[in-house]
Each structure stands twice: as C-alpha cells, then as structure tokens.
Image (cartoon, rainbow, N blue to C red; front, top):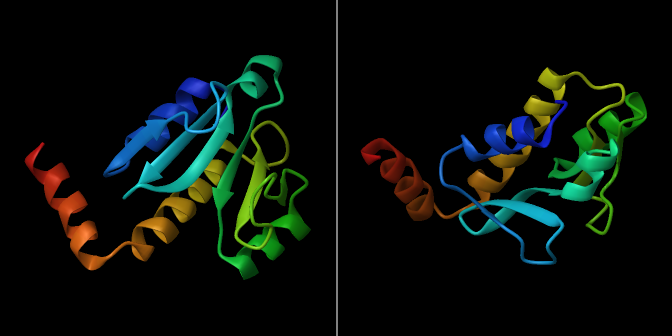
Amino acid sequence: MTTIEEFYEYCMAKKGVTESFPFDDNTLVFKVGNKMFALTGLKGWETGECSANLKCDPDYALELRAEYEAVQPGYHMSKKHWNTVACNQDLSAQQIKELIDHSYELVFKSLTKKLQKEIENFNIRC
C-alpha cells in the first residue's frame, strides 16, 4: 500500500465504516459500530514514513512481530491488542490489506448481534 488514498479507499469500502479525526487534525481514525479498527497519521504518509495502527489477535500479533520488521507493538495503544504496521517495509500491499481485514473483523465481531445486523442490512439497502 503506497498512498494514503489506497489505504483510505480500502478501509472505507468496508461495511458500516466511518472516518473521523477525534484526537487531532493529523490522526485519521476508521471505525465500525463506533469502535476503532484502524488509525493513521496523515503527516507520515506525506513524509514517506507511513504506518497504521491495526487491531490484532494477541497471539497473532506476537507471531507477526517476530516475523516482520514492519509490525511493531501499537504506538500509543494497548500493546497486547494493537500493532503499528509500517506500510513501506517488508509487508506487501496484499498482506497489509489482510491485516486491515483482520482488524475490521475483530472489531465487527465484538459488536452486538443487533448492531452487526443493522450494519449488514444498511449496506444491502444502499
């Protein structure tokens, strides 16, 4: 994933996703069901130091950190449940998309069944 546009479009294409800047005018946050699944600093993309924080299963997070230099404990986040993923190191664009998918699914599955159905049904009607 080489541009913020690619990252943005991939995240926004998922069901029920909203975007906001709840912390400052640099940190773009993606949520599903009002829960964060991805966040990224816009300035990093401008300077070539692009990264994103993505939620991750704790055991899988440890595996990824051991295997890839690009995957580090989540910056300013719970180190157990979040990774900071560099978008320009040793992960392919496809691998980054898979990590975004994993993060989204973890958060989506944590939502109430009612909210999951609302999100799924809303996207069917749109």
